[in-house]
Image 1: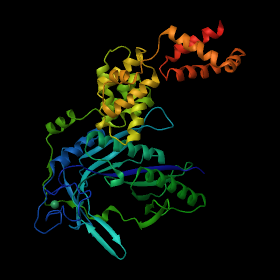
Image 2 (image 1 turned 90 degrees about the vertical axis):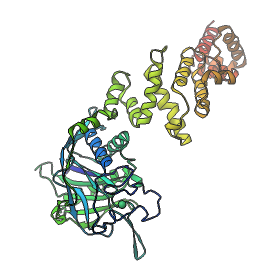
Image 3 (image 1 turned 180 degrees about the vertical axis):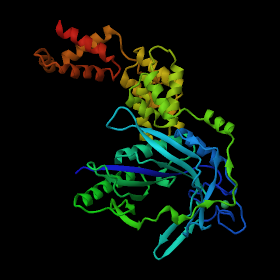
Length: 482
Ligand SMILES: [Zn+2]
């Protein structure tokens, strides 16, 4: 029997504020010596008082708006009580009944359909991170640099139905937080951490199965693999007439299996109550409005503009909007091109997602370090359009531009790449090529059409790639037919 997977996700996003959620300690702890970014507040010393980090609230509102959530003006922080060695206070300050953001959604692209699929976001709330435990032999080491770093928890409804959809959702989430600049979204560094709630529904009865939680998903790949694995595992159990226990599973990346972590405790175990050390947080609607106005254009809006105004295909637009700085570079080139002769958004898109992506990948460089000024890329495309250089030469010039940022005209002259478009010159070269290759010529005359490519190739070789290929072919055909 084919069961329908019902999946909800909880994603924790570490916000990239300068300081921690409730104290002045630096929140940038990557590569820092353990327990150096700590103070009496985040160490949970008696008598200390937390102060809310305004930037973290602003980042949460930004994300909530990008997730199409309602922003709650009245907020209360709550204590989530539990004991664990990485939690110095013995409780975590979180939000419970009154989260900052409610009832939003994210649209994701799927393979099955051309229209995006909507994943509803139930809530997004602000809390503080815990410290980090490292287990070495029989010892456990604790580093509290991370304790108190602002953390945004985003919870979806159970709208996800496959491993691919879950993958698309977390990818979209990372894209959004990066566009907003509120988090690095780096899963490998723990800046985004996922938990999945998964159950299988019997398609005949429509009954929801028992929910299993999967934790420790620390990469995009593990999100996809763990879900696929768990769907298969539960299907096997159910197919044999077995039952699924309500448990928390972990994901073992090396062995590529889920494993039992613990049987599930309910929310009641946390004894939530309003945080007595913090007053309710009432937000000024004018401030929320101001944040809304300041939001950057988001990927969905860019997609619509690229496929509409710029007439790109869905696929072309998708690779350009993936990264905000790439999209901004692309747009700046399109803006400079304006109505310049034939430098269409499509041509610019070809260069950016073709040669530029290739060279970025090869060099490991970032788009921010690219020295090709938008006007110079436009000039290069114009040189091709004007037949001054051919496509292979243009790629060569682009490669030099990528390294040096120099203007294309200068490079074309220096390397002598001007295309040979002089018909008399091409005809005489074609005549020579025909004389030098009697056998292929015979084959062509006998009807082997593809030999023409070989002969054009010979002209390109003789001219060291500078012949205009269309004109070269034309010259050959005329000579061969006469
Ligand atoms: Zn501190």
